[in-house]
Image (cartoon, rainbow, N blue to C red; front, side, top):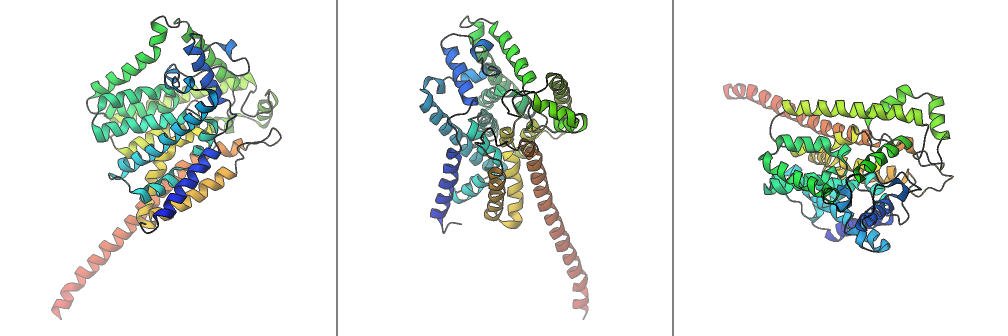
Length: 423
């Protein structure tokens, strides 16, 4: 691996450039974050529906305004570049940290390049395309765990955990694990509460009236009622749609959209039933996860944390294709287990080929007459979960079989040894 450092540098530079090429300058998500925080800085209501007549409004928690404060101070074009660079740093450091957390050692450059390729699953490219806020969620989750495991800084870990409220529907399973398994829980909760209070302090101090949070609630309801996600990554809702939505219902969902976009607007009664199911199933599965945590061993393992991030995507009441980047730790875990049998370079090369195939099979900048294959993306996180579990299971089976062969051969040799001695 150390004979060709230039080759590894070229591979790393190429995949990094590919990430930035897909960073669109004309997407609606980052525009919404930027405009809402800009309004807030000028002491206007960021949750006013009237401020966003051509969209659903800003439905993110107040913590998003805190995170986006500095990027929104920069002029628009430079702000977009700055945010892309920040997301790139978040991704690279998180991959480096997860190598340390999962293996107990720090990678050299060659190992890091292979891990980076292994981590670049298709949702990563999608996230860079839309400049989504899932990347900070992934970063703060990694930072929180790393501070606990490597620095024993539970207060700072709690502060990083508080920033995970940026997307609570994705991070609650992970937060529940940290709160229940973190040593010195008081310090963690103190940091968590500090960030939570700081995020709503402007609405308590008179900077903006507290009634803005009521408009936030209205924006969430409007967003959930008018949006139908055909690329939703949650397993319960995909089962619900498969069992409850007839062919006529699916046609209605496509017919009643306003921009010929299958993710934009749908039939309201059908979406209302779907949203009710999402909320109830999410609450039940989150409760089941917490109950399971009560019965598991008390040690805070990195592989269990990787599973918690995966569960957050797969039971979420609202998750898009790009939210699948939270499955990166599970994919790294599976890759490390397979590397015992195949080698990290071979596993990373196979994973990168599969990711490129899936990525290129989904046209990013599709024109209005070219549909994006939402049904294909809808099951991507389930596919990654299956691959990760199958990879881990394959490595376990290989070890078990090799161990059985070794033990059996030892027994045969030990049984034959007396005969040799006798003769």
